Image 1 (cartoon, rainbow over the protein chains, first blue to last red):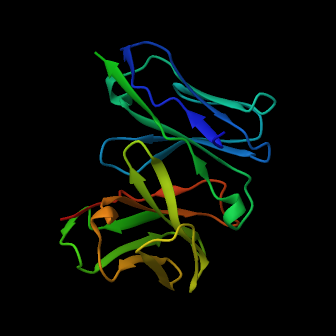
Image 2 (image 1 turned 90 degrees about the vertical axis):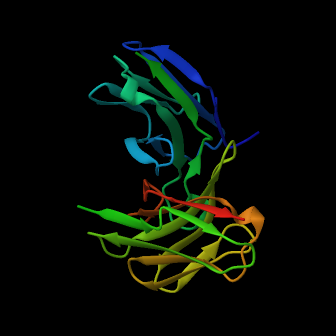
Image 3 (image 1 turned 45 degrees about the vertical axis):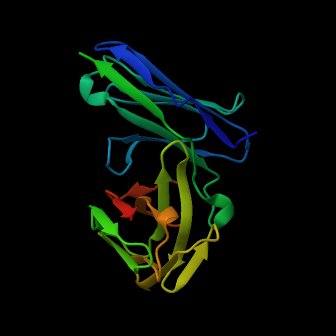
Length: 114
Length: 113
């Protein structure tokens, strides 16, 4: 079983739709959870950062972490064509050294159609 | 605010030629620094990370090396490029103690021909 699983998509939705992106993981030591947005041929941009379980909201974006299920989600409300990108989840135990390095999902490619 | 600079954005190099990619961070001190490679369908692969000047850890055996000559400078090198070194290379930094969040540069697309 891979440490982090993420459906690669592609996911295509109409403008204005609610988008749900998800990752599952196997390592119960993960405490820090991140979502990155990556436009084509650009570096990943940190979108949301969450520590431990719970929800975090920032504008149209909501990140949820369910540590009991080892499942994290990113919701995008009122999706826009500018949200079309690849979304990467990442997580770590938060301590130094190689054991604490960020583990990334492979990314979900999202396309929002006008 | 912190910024990370990575250059060049694109690079085409012949097989057997040397490589030097540079990354610098501004607005922070003593960051953790990382080099990743991203290949289509394979996600982000951590190549090297550094917790301080002259301290480099390699995650995978390869044809590449890294150096950190200054606190906020990270260099990725190769003496002789292989075709398999082609890819999208990303530099990133994170605040200490590290691995809570990482901030990426814009990447270098390397094509070895």
